[in-house]
Image 1 (cartoon, protein in one colour):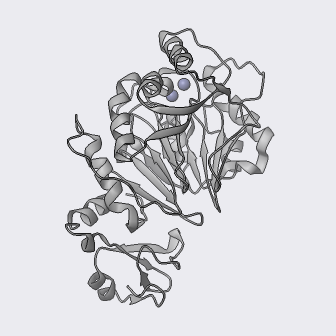
Image 2 (cartoon, rainbow, N blue to C red; image 1 turned 60 degrees about the vertical axis):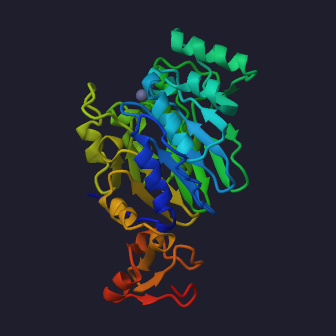
Image 3 (spheres, protein in one colour; image 1 turned 120 degrees about the horizontal axis):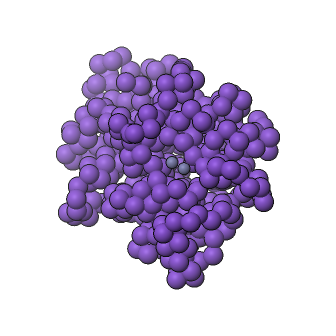
Length: 355
Ligand SMILES: [Zn+2]
Ligand SMILES: [Zn+2]
């Protein structure tokens, strides 16, 4: 198990989101308005063998990158509801394969979607045609997604596309996937869709060292046709997320790719379910559905007072309230379910937040 750092403030809300995710019906309003002040949340939603990520910015913009398979719609819909997503400001579909565009038509029909970005490539499938039809019925026109385009994401967050090259024809549909960098403060996240080596090389030529990101969504579900040496060395991520199905027929993720990611903290949706990265602009914390820590923290959360998780600084041995202005960097954080727990471990209360 990797060492997950948990931002206590968001624990309860996100856990509840997970706990309704698997249910067939949303029994009651789960009350999941995350107190998200000042954070960027990136939800790598577990859609089995496919991609779907929800980006929530500090100023309440919601951006969806990919939509899983057609059969994933209910799960995605439940997840969006649990996160109180009332509208999607933007939906970016990386390419028209059914494990990325699968639920796009239903999302368009059942949710408010303000804008859509797509690479400029058609695909001769019913899925693609139905999606294009749904867009025109909604009066939406796709924005072309290619290198140099920026997607609006509010004041604090930038979303830049480094590929595909405008007007270029790629032999592989996967290579149309925009390599997309989301940045907030000092933190950054790279999205790759199913981009393979040609796409990665174009992005590398376009962006060079600007590819550097803290978190890499590993290309093409961890296939060895992606995540080339040069690309990976430019991105040089500390964390990698692989969106992949359990026991999938493709053997994803490939052993080679896992070896290349050695030394990085790797999150896999086939092993950990939903994976949420939370950035405060300085550091990144992760919460996963499978994290035992998460369950422990929530099972004792009967009353609001119990939901407080204390955040300790492993360097200074001080502990803080999650709302403290002087929280340690994500790398130095540890959490305590109770105040007594922190004191027992030899931690002393912070002088600013006085926990
Ligand atoms: Zn795919
Ligand atoms: Zn694909």
